[in-house]
Length: 335
Ligand SMILES: [Zn+2]
Ligand SMILES: [Zn+2]
Image (cartoon, rainbow, N blue to C red; front, side, top):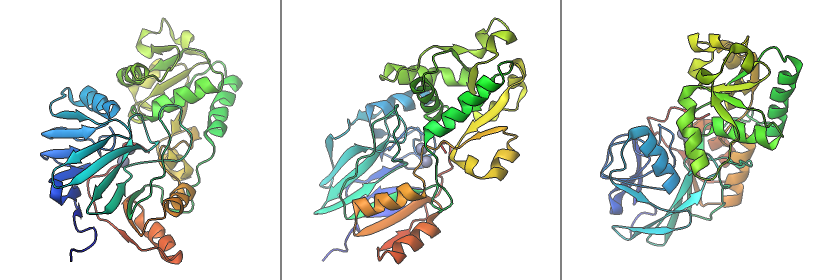
């Protein structure tokens, strides 16, 4: 008799699907990779073949300037891999193109979430609960202290600040893939139709989102602004690294804001010199992680990519079989 789930092997640099000789989100080049989404810690370049959603492949092409070996798999489409393994990509609700991977082999079902969240996000389809035997979940915010407020609340804080200080601008630090576009789309949903000014590093990813059906409204580059005055009373968006560097001096006395799940931690906001912390995360918070495990109701939960210990303890308290995986190479680009 074969050992249950022995065909799926967590290795330090990715999850190995032995019968198919394929890897999920490998952190080094392999012959066959299944990539959950475009963040750099999941989507490395240089694989011989890359299976991913068309959106993720477009993001990878933008970043690595090559489409070599790209094999698009749409949401809900099932691909046959060697060794009698079937792979289906299912929405994860994390960023444009993000997917969970359902693997089926020998009558066993394994779901690998990649990064995910359960909150509404106008830039990507919502996470779908998929029944399985083994559920491999991320745990970036796997501590009970992490409760992300409704995004409307945080967007409201941003707009209130903008209205209160019309002589200044609000400069939001946000990751170039996912967070920036979500903040823009939520500003639009809140009725903010003014020009939003972008750091040059945001431009191409925003265009890519628009090409994939996510309208972002009037966007212009800060470098194209006719004067400092043109930016007063406006929102500008830049990568977190540009928040306090020379680049930001061209803005009129910016209120520095940062959109990140880590803004729950006051010390992190202080370290970054952030005046207006916005708790906006593209990852599941503690409540989302625990309710998702309960809804999926797998026979085993494997926990990775973050704070495994507390979630492991929660599983034990709820009589759920669980263990932590020691994968390396996942640095959050995307909190
Ligand atoms: Zn990640
Ligand atoms: Zn991610």
